[in-house]
Length: 202
Image (cartoon, rainbow, N blue to C red):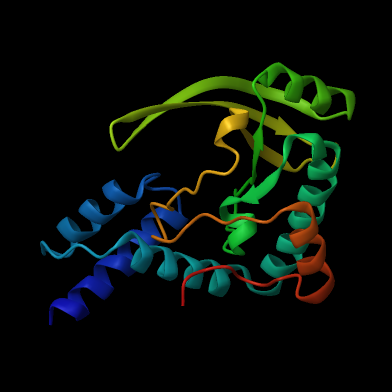
């Protein structure tokens, strides 16, 4: 019974996230549980898998075509950010995009404006820039977020972290695994061998 309830809550929470009624997993789960009159909360992973399923059913083949386009656009952008060890992360890496997804790329530089300048010189339009801080295990980590749009009208969120953070492993709060992402070489191989490959825990 608890498993059945958790499944239903996960599905309801995923529906709320997919249609934009909620933005955060935690709020979506709490609202879904309340709607279904239960206290059973699924894991973020269970919700994420349902969300991927809903996106697949709703968007069909168009979703795969869009994923390939987004990965190609990511590769193009990563190539001119090559000096900053770019890594494709987020839903475009995972292969779990939905309507409204953007392309997430992590880069490493001690002067975030360098990244902004490179993007501008390549014709990428910067729409917003902001410092963000998070607390991880008692440590405060700061990162600079650049929101941008390519000439092909693809939206990006580029996270600039300090150079010393380049080798650090980060845990994914949604899927619970290590965020490996894809380097330029990895992404080229994926696009050549299996362009819609998913990277989610089995």
